[in-house]
Image 1 (cartoon, rainbow, N blue to C red):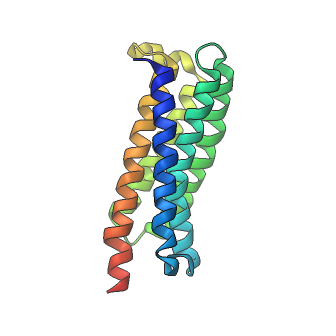
Image 2 (cartoon, one colour):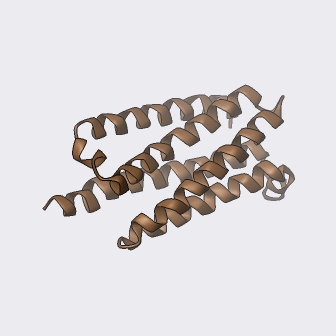
Image 3 (cartoon, rainbow, N blue to C red):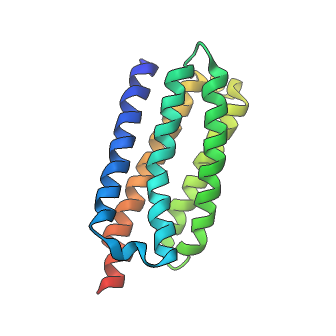
Length: 160
């Protein structure tokens, strides 16, 4: 796996998804009027932005300067984990969204562990930067699921 190429494409894709999400929000201004809904909409945006930023830092640091990407992964994952846990309160009435947010918090936590203890990744036969990439893929898949659930589930149900 060419890790630099992966992170270049992944950051571009995540930034594009964040832009698409803002485009959706622009057409749904009522989502921004309620503070709780606004937090959830912002949380979905962060679900795309944070992996994009981590990917950009991985490109800058790569295997030559691992402290750069490891530090960025740790800091941004702490932010992501905190946001995911904060959104759990908003999602309590939707079991699916609660599970998604709990899973996101777990995967952010795993990224913190990989950034803090990179040698653990070698136990599964991967470089730490590869392990981070796999965890980011799962985070973005969870972000897609959350965006879909919000657009097709909770937001639509509240409009009916």
